[in-house]
Amino acid sequence: MKISSIDAIALIDANNFYASCEQNINPNLRNKPVVILSNNDGCIIARSAEARALKIKMGTPYFKIKEKLNELDVAVLSSNYSLYGDMSRRLMNLLKNYCEEIEIYSIDEAFVSISRPNDKNLYPWARNIRSLIYQNLGITITVGIGENKVRAKIANKLAKNIDYSAGIFDLARIKNENNYLKRISVDKIWGVGRQTSNWLQSKGIKNARELRDMEENEIIKKLGIIGKRLQLELKGYKCLPIEKNKKSKKEIQVSRSFGTPVTKLEDLTQALATHAIKASEKMRSQNLQSSDIRVFARTSKYSSQNYQRSAHRKLTQATDDTNSILKIVVELSKEIYNPEYKFSKAGVLMQDLTNSEHLQQSVINYKSQKELKKSANLMKTIDLLNKRFNNNAITWAITKTPKCWTMNKNFLSRSSTTDIDQIPTIVK
Amino acid sequence: MDFFNSTTKRFRIPLLNDSVSAGFPSPADDYTEENIDLNEHLISNPFSTFFLRVKGDSMINAGIKDKDLIIVDKSLIAKPGNIIIAMIDGEFTIKRLSIKNDELYLKAENNNYPDFRFKNHIDVQIWGVVIYSIHRY
Image (cartoon, rainbow over all chains, first blue to last red; front, side, top):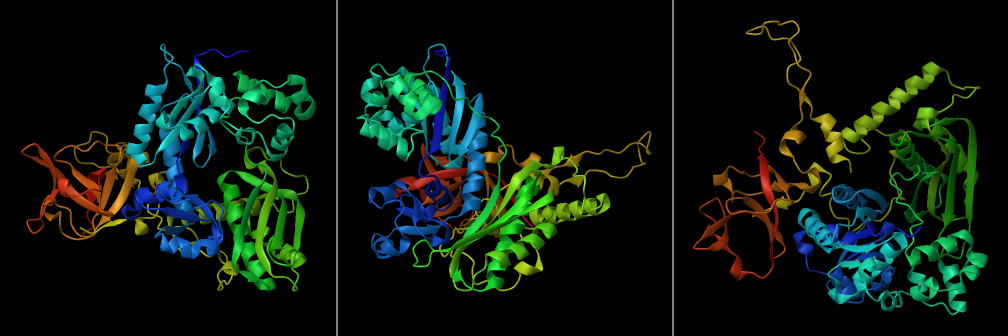
């Protein structure tokens, strides 16, 4: 069905989100070029507008550009996910008040649905929400509006590329949209991956307008229903709904790169145990339990050694109990360890997740009900204490010996919005 | 991340958890299970509220002392008379937004500190409005 002009979908995203969070809470960084480094201070993963203007590229390894950044007086920061997570939570909650439905798409992006007012003009709404978010959080957002998700994404790109847009673009209100769709190359369309993009280009399809007008059967033959849906959305039909409650995750992963490569078994075990504790905590916070626990480790992608191993254990009864999980992870770490290799990354995966609320009790319980209850209470208490007195107030002895493998976070800003001991100080 | 959520539980103080006999007709039953939640009373816009710490005595006449914790609501539009946080030349500052002869300026609440005139500076932004200060005795 052709959708009515009443409903609209907007893709709202925060500009230079990580850098903006840092600039909002640290006056020193305002109007200055700022770059944020990936985990372990590896590559540049975010840039402020000022850093973009200096033509600093995304993904550049830090060591390659260190001196240039220094010369240009660019502020360099490690990624501070407690700050970005908190600001994201604030942003999404504020957005909720200004739309009918919201689908949080990523840490700094959300699809929202809104109904069009009688005069069909959503610019006042978008201007209002933009100034409100700026006032409340000090963060600038871009609003792309369309009839559906694919077109809202395109509108968002146009809003960023068109100088006079002021961060707002409504694709459904444009007289001659062909001119605008031509500006969006196929590889920039939401849902078009690298392979699809290569195939389309080999067929001479270069931009969104050409994909919209392409022979339908040819798309279906190659890309099936997904391709058809994509084309329909480009034409203005609504195929992809707003997903208010995304399905719960199929697995929980906690993995980290090592600051210095790990060669000893005890270091590998300690790292995996630390990740396992975090993963069990994550499961409990979402009422999930795992019946398939996997650990993995690998050498650096850039080293001459190329080794990776993983091992897993299936359980007869799903669990979220840190003690039981640790026992398994310690055993598994011996299975994947190999003294000949320098490991650069390791992690744990909790697979086969089930919701503890409608968990079926296994016929063969290796633990009695009483034991299960006791361990559940213990975990609940530990989680509460850790929530109350910052993380890791209580942890397991295995993680408490000195660590040589922790990540490099040499330029970490403070947890300015989430830790009372790290809030900003006003001196004058 | 869940600062407001976790503290909701944390800061609950029972108003009365025992019966009070004086003046109550039915002392044995008369108690309340209501809790005072400081978040609820101090913070009306949790998603735009931030905490900062004060150092120094520039606001002493307004009762804001060294080491005080201040609660700032960024959603409020600053009006003359409000105590505000401004970002000036790369630093946070706390002052009272004031008006004299139709000119807005920032007033320190301590006679030893000069007033701050906007026109002498390029980079000034009002960051938020102070709604509470909390002093530990």
